[in-house]
Length: 387
Length: 194
Image (tube, rainbow over all chains, first blue to last red; front, side, top):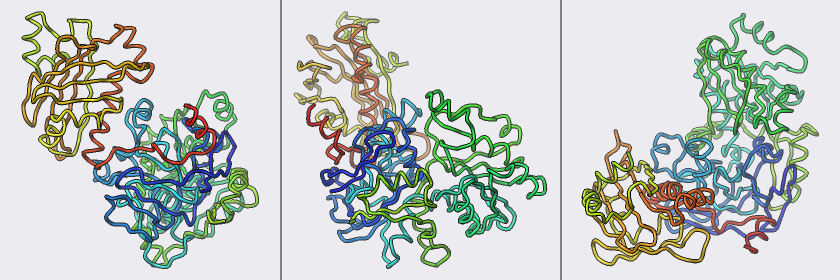
């Protein structure tokens, strides 16, 4: 089959590799019909995630049709159309039973490596470095999906791929970021830093949950426009002082909740860029610092953008002295897939709005390059594995 | 705590020590204690462990275990970094069904060792806390222990890994793996060479 392989920093190759096969009794094999590039894939592309190996197959946003099932799979059948969460969860450990699916105990074959760094290991993830299992990802024609009865959500309606593909990651991720803001309908104001795909879904989710006002902060005009289309009030951080503007628009109180939908590669601080290049700091927390200062007293800080390692010069005194609540983590995707599918089916949201580019899988290298440079208005790329 | 666990777990080992026949001579051994919590009943977990021939499923390092009698088993572990194997007979010295198993190697062991596994109910509905204590005499003394740690073959890491695999097998019904999955060019070439 053809698969998108990481072969080094800023190096992507579409290679002919072996087809995946069933390795464990609860596995299934999915023929991929649509797969997307996530903003977090760019952290791998740019070489900021440790423990990548040359030849790793990327991709954690994918859907398709089940073509083979392992002997212990009960709920799925060959021919079922499914969307697959990016985190792999066993469904039986105490975390899964508490619906904390992204920190499942039993799915990271390299848990020892993660424990050495994080203290305890999170769940295995598709196509996202060996620290989270080294699982081959779904930017490929076929993919092996462990715990087929736990993760994949069967799509029984005839909704097109574009409307349900983003249930795998960015819609639930934006939604969880908004849910973590403890929104009181008609009352809570939310500011979202970063109008990439996750930020776009965070804006729309906050409004779905009843936020009184949502402010969207970015510097890319088409991304700000897309956020406005979703109902946000935009702030162009390249033209205005974000904190001043937010204060002015919230009667001096500041937003009740702040969402960081950027994560470890934020722009805006030469200090962090240099430190990251010199490997003195793994993550570039410019946005995180700004959210900490901007959020109101007693407010909520919700982190959706990915952090992987160490950050420094964090204004911890700001969040401590203001009594800010901080919520974060990889998305517990399984928790949100069904309720969000219902919202899509009821027409409350059409996630396909975010797609700006479609390319054949064979042109993945171009797709990554276009996305990372935000060229040609690129916000979200969907790859067609059949082409 | 580890030594205490061991000796508490294995009164007959202490008895042995008094008789000068301890499997691991005093203060020369390396001791590790590792624990995990498994959402299964203590008896089910004990039953799996008590059949020592089940253990190679959860021990990642190549090991062959043959049960010789209800109390006695033969262990053959491939030595770190070599083609040789380390062999010993182990005898169960304490056995409390559903709660505790303790064992030690017999006279003439290539790697003298003693160990115990304890099964205790966890708070609430978390399941069972499984605590393994292991004491052994590294083949090359302290130097061997350091070398083993650097190569990832150190017993503390091995016990942690075995407990993780035990938990996955008992809770999820399988041990997570990526062995045999497709990989791109450079890894494929490297894996074929090695």
